[in-house]
Image 1 (cartoon, one colour):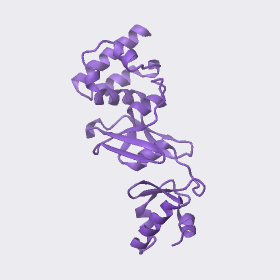
Image 2 (tube, one colour):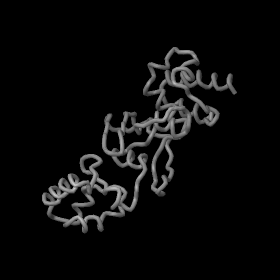
Image 3 (cartoon, one colour):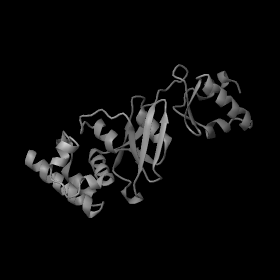
Image 4 (cartoon, helix red, strand yellow):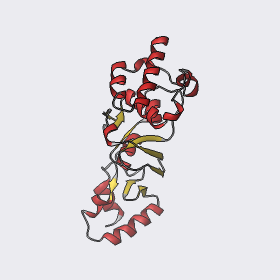
Length: 210
């Protein structure tokens, strides 16, 4: 298979897995060698082992970084810092795309940026929603309340036995009025007692500043 044939076959794919490629050819090793040459020429971009995307000029779909985060490592959903930035709950621009997964901790770096995955237990893998990115591709991102909870849970030592200054001075959380308090509390009860204590502290702070 030459590059023109490859492009015609896969130009409409947002990402290309080796399983897609090898389903249409029996010459596996020959195609592996071609993929390496195409990468060197900039025709194909490697996202991680076994996952590729066509160069910017030849691909028909330009997937969002959230879509790529979901595709790079599954099951996962975007959460913590990146999701907090997405919902404008923090003022900083977040460059690394942060996600949670039931699998092992992982980090990928490619030409689209850095993608970081933190581990959650299976019973805490909930509270995300499906939205459509700018290409109408489905992507999974935490609901704002779950993004807050995942962040607290994964950084619990920074929150335990702290007063409410931790929310505004240490982390500069803002626009907390978008959070649904009932949902936040219901979700928090599915975590441990330490997380629930932090959330009760946060709810008190939100009531005081309302």
